[in-house]
Length: 378
Image (cartoon, rainbow, N blue to C red; front, side, top):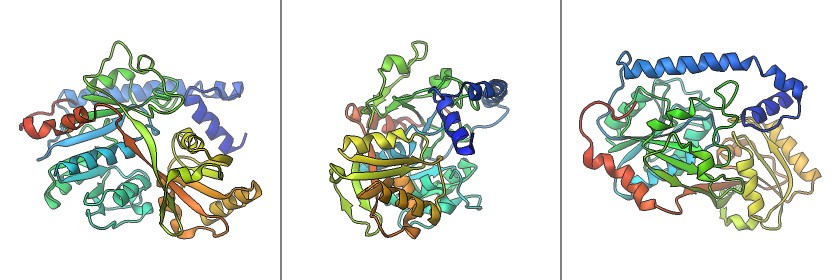
């Protein structure tokens, strides 16, 4: 089996989907031992913070963490955007801090955006921080492997009132005032096993550390009922539902906007490099597009000019009228697009169809009750 086929089979296996290869599934069996070792290491790490052997550090302003128990695909970036915008709407100066996964920035703290200008390329920043910087005007975006350093820099340099910590559920060094856990309603736990045998970063029981659970993709056709997602033994203090809704179709040549429903009836060739490709395919079909072809690349894939020429060639052969990708992918390909077919990115946003005011009150709660002292939760 080719490497790409192996990667796809592994991705299906950890998501709890059939791979179609019994021999291949047998080869995954040794990963059970690796998952056990990983689980023990995670438990020891959590215990070391709770026992005070490793210190959780408090910032001079409230910290709101957005994270998950699985790797990739839950919609953290749209959730961070929504939360930052909600805080901004109440006059709160906010910064976003991310690890900058796969970003090439070498500084201890990388300023992706100062709130006015985007200062780094997608390669230096990492695709998701760059996307945040492009969309969040007036919001500094910073990355660092030690997110406490980036958060402290944002607080002192930009004098922000709050920091939103991207992908922070497992980041225990920085204390948080609100701990929000995202769960993908279409595939909450994959096969239910820990990395590398599954997609869980921590056991499901650690959901109890969250102040609130935000279910994502609740409008997806494959979304599950809450009873199938939330174990009876672990009930979150707050539970919110969200939808992922297309908001604009952006022409990558001209940067002009069109309504998402422009895709209706069009023959569309789509591609993406995200953790859950089906979450991109489904809304395209829901918009009434006729899918001429679809190609999924690994998450955080770095495209080359040759990749795009290949995509355009395949789309042309399948009589596609246009090519569509995600906002995260679109940010990385603008500089070397071929010119035979139009390329678009489909921007989407996270929305709260219900209890939006309750969610906002949760975000604002630290500003009324925050006191200097130990972190509320590890």
